[in-house]
Length: 147
Image (cartoon, rainbow, N blue to C red; front, side, top):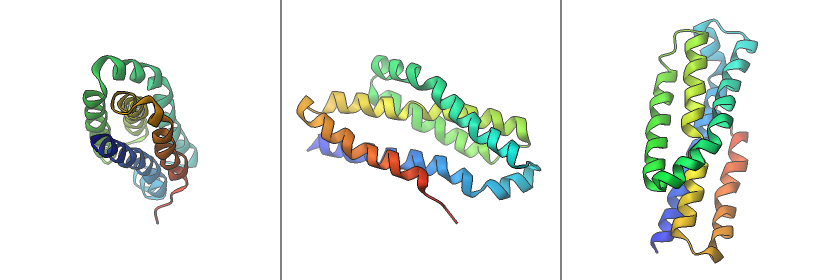
């Protein structure tokens, strides 16, 4: 029974990571206007997240293996929550780039941590199905648009 609660929690975590990522695109106009950023600058902001995320994926997997999924995911959620809040405190392009880059690094640990949790909590015969449950949220959420 516990393993199904773990799977449900990881599904919610997966969904939140993508909603969190997509939300800034809905605020693009407001952020751009407030910080005097054009489309090119906002593209750099979006790319800063992706770069931080890509760079941190392998180290995040290593940390998930060393620290364990519970501690890793606790750190990941705490850090990305801090950087989400700091996004609103950005004063210009450079601070927003730095915050979004750090946010990408922080969020990069979500899926390696989730994979490690599945490995730790589920028998091998159930892991493929569990990943199949997590990754539809992973694949579909970037298409979300918030008015």
